[in-house]
Length: 98
Image 1 (cartoon, rainbow, N blue to C red):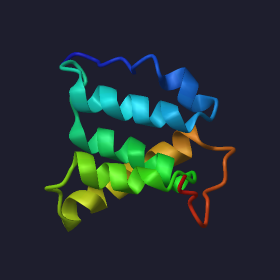
Image 2: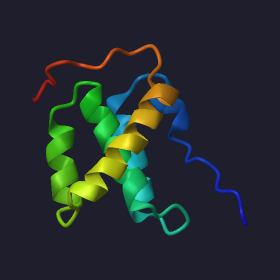
Image 3: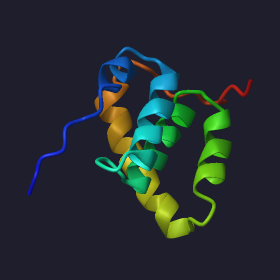
C-alpha cells in the first residue's frame, strides 16, 4: 500500500486561508493521484464551518447526487479536519455569504 502525500496546499490551510480549502478540494476532486470525493467535499464543509457561506452551495454544485448518508460521512470527516487544521479558528455561527 503506497502512502499518499498531502498536496502542497496544506501549508496554506494551516495559515487560515479559506481559499486553500477550495484548492485542496479541487485537488481531491480532479487530480488522478489524489481522487477522493468525500475528502473533496469535506474540505469545502470546513470552509463553510469557518464562515464561508458560499461553500455549502459549492458542495451541492460539485456533488449533486450525494444523499444523507454521504453528507453524514462528509460531516464526520470535516469535523476531523477542522480539529486538525483549524485549531485556533472559531467556527462561525452565521456564515458570511459574499
